[in-house]
Image (cartoon, one colour):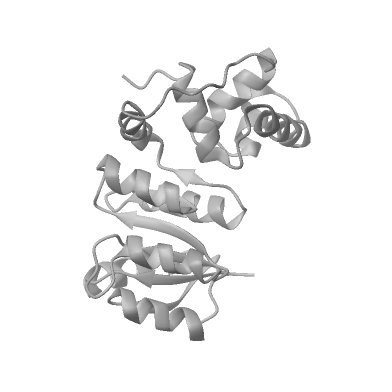
Length: 214
């Protein structure tokens, strides 16, 4: 089954370029394109899609507002922010609202496809080189009261690899363990650090010095 994608960007050439690149892969199909936020919201009422590739800067209703509206109305679609912005405010706001992923437009198509597959599979995907930007946003926040106490050595290894953006299958290969074992470790990690997704786990890792982002 193909992953159905809705594109929302106010630049038609960018939309067409992304569409052509993605549809070279038989696993993807673009089912609709919106040029502004309001058009995007209307399409969400009439088009069935799995993933929304959503630009931040759009007329009439920007991407952050669209994301907020999607969450308020409980629209069942995964939202992957695709933007030129690597500023901390945009990233933190999108993560706080509950985007499923955040990737820059200058990324190569393989990373974009990896991000789409990741969020389609239920994971949160933050472009790995945006982790330092995410860290900047934590500087002015309260220090985490969480500690590493309770995490096993293996769970810490898995957590570090989660923060690097690796899939469970990739983690399994890297650590020479089964994917099922990785899934169990991830579940245990989330419970122990009170995280609901991979983004929150990455934030925890950064706050506790497990990842060098300098």
